[in-house]
Image (cartoon, rainbow, N blue to C red; front, side, top):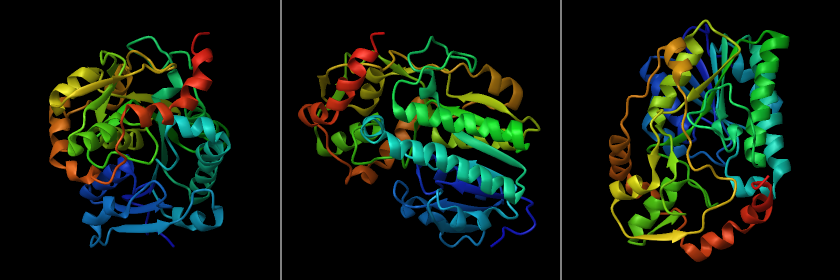
Length: 338
């Protein structure tokens, strides 16, 4: 199994997922040959359906921890974009072993496959959650304070990537994603990402469940802008670098509710959550020439046009949210005070 000459070819792990599928869109639009590796636990085939007749796209259904299954797929690949992993905060506190096995050891397996395949550049999808309760704006040099196992697992995955770059000479960069949003945004059975919660509530005509007073701000970055950041991190001659990817222009949850238009009900603020996330994107702008292009209002408009996608998502209310986040309060309530 080979991608041919290696010119203009890429592997996208987790390519049927939210950000991964936008990465696939961009690579195919650039005329590249793309192989997606996905186990379709978090990803959805529908995210790739608009490319089903494109001969430049191949899809391998496999788990990244299955070395024998994934190893041959890397032969002839020029770039590897590693998005595969598991997310959500509360499940990571309930199943930390799963998160370490997938997000850390799974990353090691992908690194080894990439090294054996002789790829030109490996780009890792890291998480800004590694910063914890950070000063804002947050540069890449900020101290790291992971607050929960998901954040820790993504940071340790990044450490592995940098280690493989240093020890084995695998050219690699890491992109720390801030608050990603956009069409196809991930929705699971777990309580989590604000857009998935709010869009389902809007479809059902229910109030938006705003955490705290809604003044908290998040550095929302549209998925197609992220894909361009990852491609820039692959094409650069630089290696062993870590870049923040955000808009550098955080928006309040109250502003999001204003754009979505609807009633509001408030739920308790959660421990361990920052009042603001705010990426200092000076480094990626200066070194890679990347800058976000999609204004927040435009991104929200695009999501509203695609709102029917969330009709089968879980419908949350204050009572079900309280039940779903009980673990959150149990484990982070005290640690967040220290």
